[in-house]
Amino acid sequence: MDAFRSHRGTLATLNRANVDTDQIIPKQFLKSIARTGFGPHLFHDWRYRADGSPNPEFPLNAERYRGASILVARNNFGCGSSREHAVWAVLQDGFRVVLAPWEERGGVRVPAFADIFRSNAGKNALLTVELSAPEIEEIFQLVDRFPGLEATVDLDHQRVTVHLPEEVSFHFEIEPAVKERLIHGLDDIGLTLKRDAAIAAFEARHDPQLARATTR
Image (cartoon, rainbow, N blue to C red; front, side):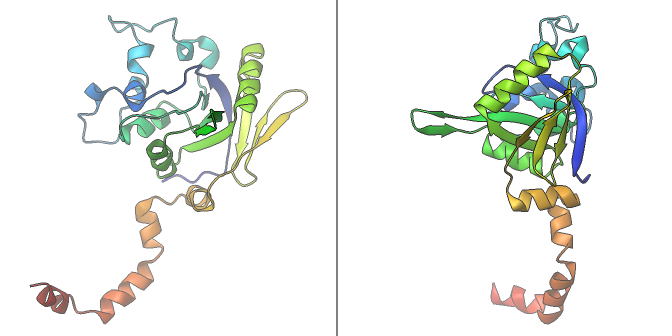
């Protein structure tokens, strides 16, 4: 997969919490056995009217967000079923980063992203950034005030910088293993191939015929 170190792009906001994977990519578009062609169907049921025309009331259809590549959402993004297609759809529509907030409600931490969506994102070069609710709210307000606002997401330094005359920056945490995977562009196959020499040495020391005989 593509490596991710730093990305600068236009911010687009989606002011909805608990966006589930069926809303991200509805089930009728999961019939393809290819991993391409999902981008046009991102948020399909919100994005289009019944006649197939764009819904002007859906925020991401606004002209100001054309070409945006950093999506800002609310908490629990990507909940629901475990379909990896949801991550593919987000990426193929042009987004490289999704920002969302964690919140605490009644002593319970509500995550920015559902666990399976976050895991799938890390395996496909989509960076998920978790910030606090006040930080995300500040970004929402800045995007509303400044059309075409851009930000840089620097994975090396774990920082989101919003580009204003006086820049605003936010630090984020990320699991070291996920960070390494993204920086080096390693999907599951790539991680396995890093251990190619050790695998070959193991296979040279073990007789596969003997292994089959002992399982009978």
